[in-house]
Image (tube, rainbow, N blue to C red; front, side, top):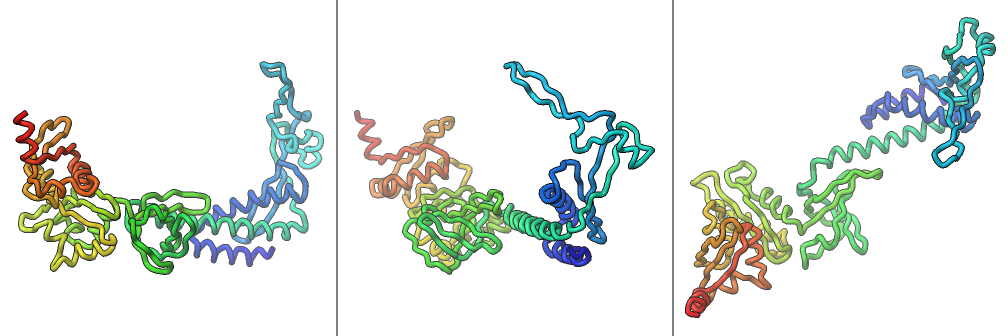
Length: 370
């Protein structure tokens, strides 16, 4: 291996990929020690030193001076089995005092010294090892960079490209990585084409040996929340705020908003001029209905608002501790308040966190006459 060319290449790669040179050198030294043991003997008392400036590689065996070889001892465990106890000093690293004195007369028992054992043709082994280590470190650095880029994206919405699909999933190109969008996480009834742009909500990011695992969704309620934040500037600057979002994907979402400015109508801000803002959101949701609910601290009023599109709703809080409420509606608003298969009342209950019972005046009167 040409040391100068290696250092030059290492400088270029570490700068381009943002890899620590010291980490590369340390990994090289460990890998070369393993390569030496594999190709030139199995001794364990070997370490490799690389010159950080010149790239020169030297292999050293280190020894501890002893008065007699110690290959360990034996004992028995609780079941009477013979157990081998390894020596305090590795056998390969032991050298007798007499032999050590021939190398250096000043050595005494307990002293440690090194002896260079660099093979003449070690450059060939070093070249292959260097390539493997650099490839590994580059991959690790790229995975770390991708993870750093995506680690704060959980709970956010991203624009991607539909790259491929299999039986269960779509794979969304998000730039340096791909997200997994399960087909069960698509909005019911929507169809997509490969190669087209798509917005996805990131529900989970997990680090794996192959890079980040990015799980996406278009059914998550957070997808609706991020759509509103994208389309409505007043949500970004804090003029209006989202109190809560609940959703039955493909059918209906309820979005509760309130204004921090008495001069700004939160519902009107979300709808936009000629319905432009809410229209963009509805288009993205494949026609899913959206009820914009004005949030108020008055629970009766909030629950009545939450039962939209039903109108003329009167609400009584039956038990504030158990969060139980009775909503009284007219006959022509009953089906609207309940919704198809009970969807509207279920969403209103989730939005307000109250268990809501709906009755008409006629039902109440009939019960009172019994």
